[in-house]
Image 1 (cartoon, rainbow, N blue to C red):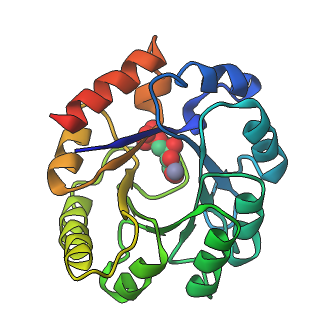
Image 2: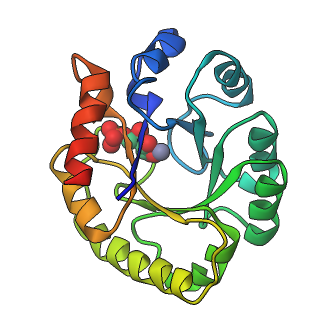
Length: 224
Ligand code: DX5
Ligand code: ZN
């Protein structure tokens, strides 16, 4: 099974972002950037100027997770800036179809994120418009939170739905099933077993003495 590992720079040293990205560049598939606006989540991180610099100075493709109240306004700009993937939250978007299409039209992969308490079913029809479904495994906002076990059931259901879509020819490209929050060497195996194939990990990578080795260890556990 092919998996993607996306280290989250939320757990990195923000004064040394290029070095922190370089530390995982040989081992990771993407670099996860949490854009937070202090409205959708109670935390404030970075915005478009920092992402534009990262696009220029970092070898890994960027995986932008928009924890913002108005993703319909902001998402296309991140795609135009050169991000590989831009993910919006189902709870925040008012016009998901238009925004997911705008992300793709700007040349990026489009992602739809669900908070732990948000059910998948109302959003199933949107999967045809998306390249990634992100099932949050903690409430968004902060790193180092404890993995919420009850979210695994949604991962399992999402895997069945995605596989059924593929079987009935409803997909032109693979739909990644991503998890984000509390992912470590133990929980990543449980997420993979439930059907996830794309993994965000912040503290499990950047709290480690050797972030590259931590990514390799996570990948080995996910591929087990
Ligand atoms: C949480 C963010 C995550 C965060 C994960 O709101 O979306 O990307 O960085 O951090 P860990 O892996 O430490 O739970
Ligand atoms: Zn995130």
